[in-house]
Length: 309
Image 1 (cartoon, rainbow, N blue to C red):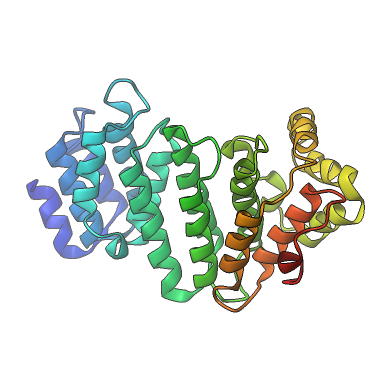
Image 2: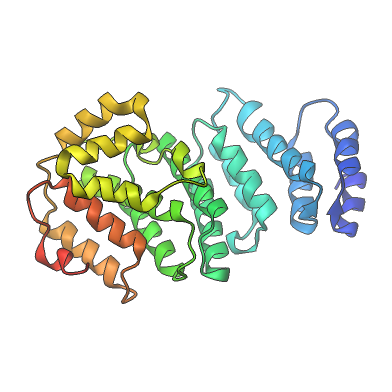
């Protein structure tokens, strides 16, 4: 291990001055090698606390090494993905600083190997299980890894990812989940179901787009869902148009294409079993059911699904 980094591991805190010294002494050549990256990840595991510049530096170094240094730029190789997972070791043991640096890295990638995505999602699961609450940061972490999974050719959300989202939702039984979780859950699981029944869904990047209105303290989640349900099919279009006007034309075509889509018996059984697994129907699951009813238009939902709300 680099002598300077080794010394930092013993103090358990990385100051802004420490970050400047690392930039000059360890990474002054602007090229990060495997040994330096392994040392940096060990330091992050042993000294997660520090000045905000420490986490920023860690994320930048990971993005440079795993995403920008190789060719083609933006693509993490399978070899580097395996190296990263080995360095991080166990998903239930990584701290928030490392997890957020990992999120920073995948946000700058065009493609990330599936084992890295799986590792990140499992790390998020461990953090949610720790306090049974999904906060705003955790929503954005999930969103980042689902975006990254799209680079592997999975245009729509997969069955495995939908099941993971249900697992996460069941684990977060608190009523204090951030409102953006219900929105992400509804869109992501709905995206999977629409693709599975033959409806051509929007890309996961469209389906999971973080809406600007969610950042606003005046965001009215209830009002949004109300507009979706009270005015029928046109209201769905209007509600989505209100969220991102620049995509209104695409949204209209996408919703109209799926207007006649109907849940199959197999998908209904899977969905009902997942919702009933923990014996509760929470806000996110209610939002999903409402979303599916709107997509089916005047066709009623299967009785066993409609009976849940």
